[in-house]
Length: 254
Image (cartoon, rainbow, N blue to C red; front, side, top):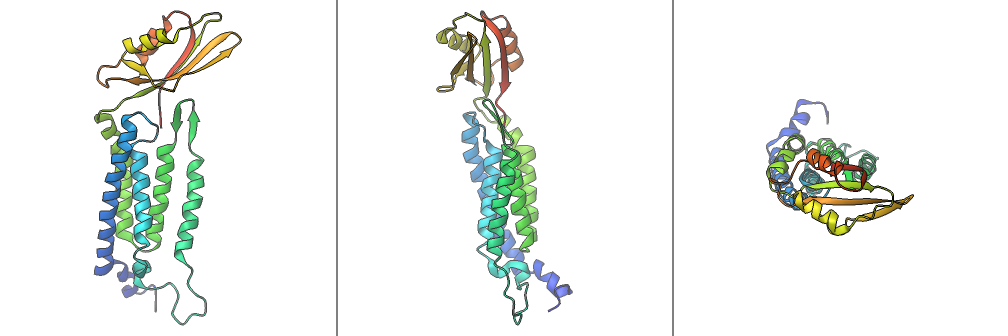
């Protein structure tokens, strides 16, 4: 069979394969919605991995799983090797497994932790999703691959705006270095945070003493997204707080 003939190429867009692509598409949409739902719960409580990360990973995982259920439709419905060839066709599922494992290591390389902030999670998830797109193209589900790419791009571009619109508890990473010999009181710091619309996240407070100077690290959680003061204003107020030598205030990033 001539794999470059019109009939062979048209097989990738036959009615049966397009129907399978549509079934895959519905699975992807459902997985994306469920992933966004779980990710919103994490984003609401200010955790690093939010809606985009969960949505992309859930959708890509569904794509890799659902295409394995239609091996008869891979490669346009015909095998890459002629039936009379003495060399058997390679097991594509093993190839997929190797790709997913390798891309996982690549994604891990772009994740960086800076204090309480974790950067690169969305980039790592998008890299992993792009591998799922490439695999879907490779097995011949072109329509599903196009739809997966579109959904991934929409997730990266627009879900962040959805996260900003939905109610959530924003987290601010705070590092405060007090003057040498100054003994800060935990209740005083908590009271200062409450007056500015923030609470110190339970279990986030850590204290380091360097050359007699106490250094506090904690996460400040906004009680009300609409009433909390801006980070810049919070930093300005910290400048005038008693005993503060230096500080660092930043949004928890992902």
